Length: 392
Length: 61
Ligand SMILES: Cc1cc2nc3c(=O)[nH]c(=O)nc-3n(C[C@H](O)[C@H](O)[C@H](O)COP(=O)(O)OP(=O)(O)OC[C@H]3O[C@@H](n4cnc5c(N)ncnc54)[C@H](O)[C@@H]3O)c2cc1C
Ligand code: SF4
Image 1 (tube, chains in turn blue, red):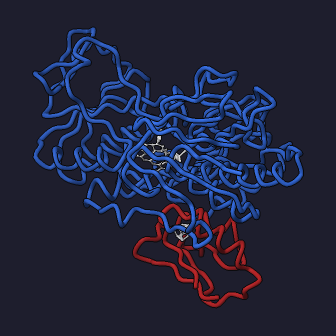
Image 2 (image 1 turned 90 degrees about the horizontal axis):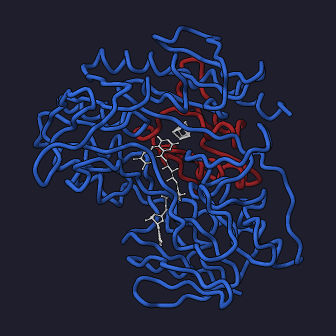
């Protein structure tokens, strides 16, 4: 029996650990595009960008139980042959599988406007973080396209390093989609107090500069110029290598509560981490692909357990998805922490403090709490998080 | 079993608390407090806490 895991990130690592934890004794092979063992990505926009951490600082500890896993680095999956049950790698190598696990995560989306071919910075992996850090240190002004978490964290880190920052984004407020307009406005004001200049509701007409982009022009005619441009406008799931079968790959890989691809039913394909889309049963039955750090661990654990169960009993493990999505974000001295899915709420309720300072904010949909977000209030959030387990 | 948290790394997010609230807790000041000597029967939950710590600050011996 051979489990082939494609993607050597956190989700792939947790799947392997969970397989061994559940007693699977067969072969496990993990293929990763990067030259590294799985490492922690969140510091890439925070500490590692500010202070230049090494890969050794970021690598996850690997449990003794997975010492016999076969790792293939610097190679990536190109295509999948479902009939033969094999995956073709870029090196030309063919890897067979009995069970295939997609753990390939996401890549940054690219804005398709005139000048898009100019070189820009993005931030998803260690190499990109090193490149961005090196160039940032020699820069006076950074233009960041996109005002999501990553864009805002890079802005905060750059300000810490004394670099001027302009953020240009199409949304009305920073972090608008995950946290809504009111919270977003409060976060924008925190950034503005630190000297970040925002251009929101911006319609970008194109990138400016020579071979390297040095700014953007807006449809209004305004030009925002700096020394370098960072693009952080969201992500695309890495699923191209899974095409040609019957999987639903509309936005990541659609999977059931055991993390098994919902079609075709006879095939043993699973997906975990940022690339997986599934229903969060504590909230509703709409499948969602959520890119929060705790979910690679939750989905990897679930997949390992379901695969082991399936291989020993021939039956699919049916268990509701009881994961509570959770993320944090550090911007300046502020620590934002969220539980649940605040992005689906229709109203908010500040239950402690005020939006401009330390606070706890509940997010409601049809009067039901679907998320809670705190700023510098970690110690107060536990009772709010526990309530999600009681919602349905 | 011995539990150690690198307080240089810990950012007091309290994710560990949800895995093993008898071992980890956040004080009123928001700072992490934890037990360094923990019964072996708690190993599985403590290892879960190691997994979910965003700063990877927890070690177990
Ligand atoms: C800069 C940054 C900051 C973040 N900050 C936070 C935060 O503060 N809080 C939070 O909750 N979350 C944060 N996240 C999100 C969090 O890191 C992700 O949710 C998590 O890394 C997802 O893990 P994963 O294993 O699913 O995917 P990844 O960690 O992306 O791993 C996927 C791996 O698969 C490889 N791969 C891709 N395609 C192929 C292929 N075809 N063949 C072989 N290998 C392939 C990739 O190179 C990569 O190594 C941040 C992410 C980034 C990039
Ligand atoms: S999860 Fe990690 S960072 Fe958070 S309080 Fe626990 S030890 Fe500290």
